[in-house]
Every structure is written in C-alpha cells, then in structure tokens.
Amino acid sequence: MRLVISAVCVIVLFSYYAAAYDPLDPNGNITIKWDVVSWTADGYVAVVTMSNFQMFRHIMNPGWTLAWTWAKKEVIWSMVGAQTTEQGDCSKFKGNVPHCCKKTPTVVDLLPGVPYNQQFTNCCKGGVVAAWGQDPSAAISSFQVSVGLAGTSNKTVKLPKNFTLLAPGPGYTCGPAKVVPSTTFFTPDKRRKTQALMTWNVTCTYSQFLARKNPSCCVSLSSFYNETITPCPSCACGCQNKKNCVKSDSKHLSMVGIHTPKKDNEPLLQCTHHMCPIRVHWHVKLNYKDYWRVKIAVTNFNYRMNYSLWTLAVQHPNLNNVTQVFSFDYKPLLPYESINDTGMFYGMKFFNDLLMEAGPTGNVQSEVLLQKDTDTFTLKQGWAFPRKVYFNGEECMLPPPDTYPFLPNTAPVNLLSFPAIIFSVLLMLAFW
Image (cartoon, rainbow, N blue to C red):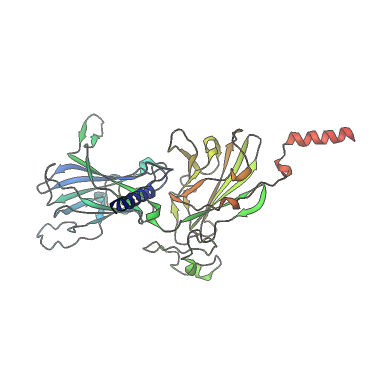
C-alpha cells in the first residue's frame, strides 16, 4: 500500500512540474526580489523588484497583483510606486496610521501619471510588464515598502510566506522566499558600490494547465499549391461562450459600453466555429529556387480586448535561416543553444505593436522570407507548417496533421522550374 501511495505522489509531483515547464522557454520565470536597504526603529525599508525572465510571455493589462502572508504581526507603514488594495483594520493605531494592517496584503502597481512624489524606479505602468525577450528594459517592475512591527536585523526578520501572483489572471505558482546573497548597487557616478542589508527571492513559474481549461488561440493553414484552407478545429477554445457571442454585423456592437472590458476580463467574442479570441493563420505563399515565402496573419475576435505588446512564438526547423521579416520585428529564441528552430515575432513600436479589438482593424500581418536548406526543405507531408505556435505565451491549438493542405500528386505549372519550361518549348520547336 505504501508503494502505491508513493507512486501516486511521484506521478502527481511529476505532472505538476511538467505542467509548469515550457520546452520553448525552459528557464522562463518571474523572480520577485526583496532588498532590505535600511533598518528602522520597528522594522525595515525594502525595495521589491519583479523581473519577468520569460522570453515571450508578458504581463498584460490590467497588470499584476501580488499578495503574501506576514510571518508575524507586521504592518506596512508606507509604499512608494505601488499600493495595497485594502487598508484593513488599523483601529489600534493612534496618530500615525499604517498604509495597510492586513495579515495578507494585496499589492498592485500604480497607474501612469501619478504625482512624482509617489513614483519609484520602474513603477507606475498599471502593472504591465514586457517579456524579457521582447524588451528587457521594460521587463521590470518595482516599488518600495516600509514595514513595521517586524525584525530589525538579519537574525530577527521573518520572511513573508504564501506568495501569490496574478498576471493578470491565474496560472502562476510561487515558491517559498529564500535568502540569497545581498544585491549590490552602483552609485549614479559608477564610482562606489553598495549592497543591500539583506536579500531574499521568490520564484514564480507559469502553467497554462493551471491558467485555463481550454486554449486561448488556434491556428489555420493554407498554401499556394492547394486550394483547401485548413480551418481552426471546431470549438478549439471551448464553446462555453457560444451563447454570449455576437455576429460581426450585429446591432449590439453599436451599443454604448459594449466594448468596455469587464473586471473579470470576460470576453465578448465574435461567433465563429472555433470560438477563440485569437486566430493565427499560416499561409505558404511562394516557392522560389533558393527561398520560400510565408504570410502570417493574427486576427482578434474579442470585442473587449486590445492586445498591447503582443508576441507570437513559432517553432519550425527552417527558422534557423530567416532572410527577411517584412513588417514584424523578429528575434530568434535559443532555448537549447545547439538547436535554432524557434523564433519570436512581435509588433514594431508605434506601428503595429497594438492588436486592436475585433473588427476591420483587428488584425496584424507580415511576410517572412526563408532561405532553403536543400537537405531538409520539402513541401511534402506538411513540413512547411509550424510545429508549435504561441500567442502571448499561450500555446495555440493546431489542426490535426491529416487535415493539412497536401501536395498534389502532379505538380502544377508554378512548381516547375523556369529553365525546364524553356527547354521543353525549344525541344518542341526543334521537332516541329
């Protein structure tokens, strides 16, 4: 019996960690670092820095929400660059009242445009944090917190526990706080180095399985050599929103406030057979002698969501030889240094980095020119289509392989080489 219980525990643990592991971003995580920068009469002042080390998964609007449980009876005297959502019961304090007295405080980022004296370095972006692979300088969010009724030395401080992170929804699991070597800082003139009095880290990893039951995007396929378009699978993202969807020509879309996002981010989807907020279309457009060309289109079917700082990660063996990307920015991702088959597409700043809500402007598209590897390139058996597709860090559902556009048994004229056509014409003239 003990053996059976042990085996079940191992399977559960393995399943949990497997769910939180992303093969295209094996080292991706969000690290929350607490640096104690000074001691106070009854506690300490700490700088809390949230770094998004995920290559293609960012924190989108309405931003992150961070919570934890105090180990003792700590209170938050003040905060700069963030705020708690509730103050709690501070009735026992007279005169100077704390910012928050809750045992489990919940913290959110401040909005852009707050007064200067409330701002802190890398704060006040409404909780929106870019992916590390897209923009490392914008992949950081931080705030300062003054903690009271706490320890006043490295030996008496008790680390907070039970950290939770919503970014903006569920899916992240945070480990326990661990003391690490103190962070070092340079003065503005770079001539003096200081260090934190104490530092601890919390690491949070993402699992799509924990975030939602169904995918949030799907992929459709087409090619120049086959008139068949392979659509997204039916109910690819679940059909639970089928009753509340609207048709593209519905009069309801002209109602005031219908496009306003809900607090729970409930989508208002266009009625489709796949019922996905996002569809990625991959079209094999042209086949040259030494190159081939693909068109990628991303369409938004959610009338209540604009996707800022969107990312599209694709796995395909020929991404090791990308010649040109025409209207997206592109960066190769190398999760395993010896294999270069994964890349990230994202919008050009101030041009198409914002994917608008469903409608005439709710799409972005680009074309990619790839150089052929004569040893591997083929149009047979669906080789030209992607192996994995992620939108904003969420894996999209691909159609079944047996439904991919297939190569006809007899190649059409546009698949024949130009020299071969010329040779055939000259041969016919010679005999004629």
